[in-house]
Length: 452
Image 1 (cartoon, rainbow, N blue to C red):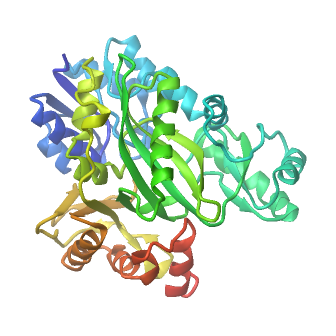
Image 2: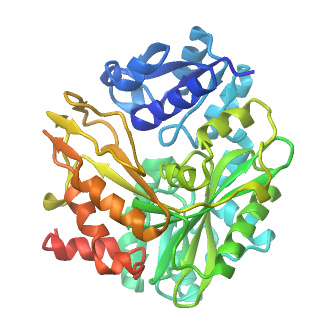
């Protein structure tokens, strides 16, 4: 039984977890930094404990402090949310050592999937398509050799992490020489490991991911796929479920491959298997596994009616998955836009400060996940996400129309936001017609903002 959950996270995901726990009758403890002591998660949780100064390295990233906070408040489980320590196997193992339930996969699975080269190998062994790629690269000479073997263009990646850190698209040996050391240094700073590898780069690609659930009894199901193609600097900004303009056979094969991979590693809890879809060749390739709840999970919830966070908690408590694959039905279409405190006109410069007016949109088929309110101070220490606007309709056309309405009627004053940019994107003919790829957002933003 899970009786009390410590949440060492902040923002909308912390509030989202609190709401899921309340629905299940579980008490919550918000573990917050000094900057978040007056936040909505702190106000809505049953208890609050301060785990350190504002900087994440002194609070949200300190495993010992978090474990101490859980034990000290009598919590018997920890939900890490996303970001911070969510994909750090050390936290999962520390929970096990101290008799706490980690609401996520076991540390061994997190560790295995966190190494991108090992994850590639497991996918290959499971007969799932992977992009042509290299082994771990030791130096720039190795990189040049492998790039020639793979064929340009290639993409340089960090072996120990994702999120675009250490990632570079390379089209010539000269570019590889110029970027190798900087990519390795960026990977080392972000993940404590500067190891790199190469994969073939697909220029006309879409990013497709499959939401999975696995329990302790070997059962694995998928909740359909999402399209996360619209990205800026490898960070997703608009997501959809299900993926439109995807051949039916590809859709079925991707979901089948995701379940197959998850079963092969004995996956437990919620997770996401990510793929690259080559639109020119109509082929998909394994990309990576995210061993946590995703930012974009609401679009899947809206078309399946399943509360994924509640399912995470139930599975962590030792319950069977409550639904069979045949019982999962995809109804309608959902879109999510991430609204951030950034100034698109100034190169997406972060815009911390106090929100002087906050009126979120309301109406049929509109959901807003947020931790903000009038008077809230957006701190400069963390990710700039303010809200996720989610709309659902009977089809994609209706979901887009509702999103147009929602973004047009979202009032935020006091800080700069990406609302105007999001409004621009979803009204572009290429977006509406599905003629996009993973570089499309950067291309249109350069045109709109004079290459800033």
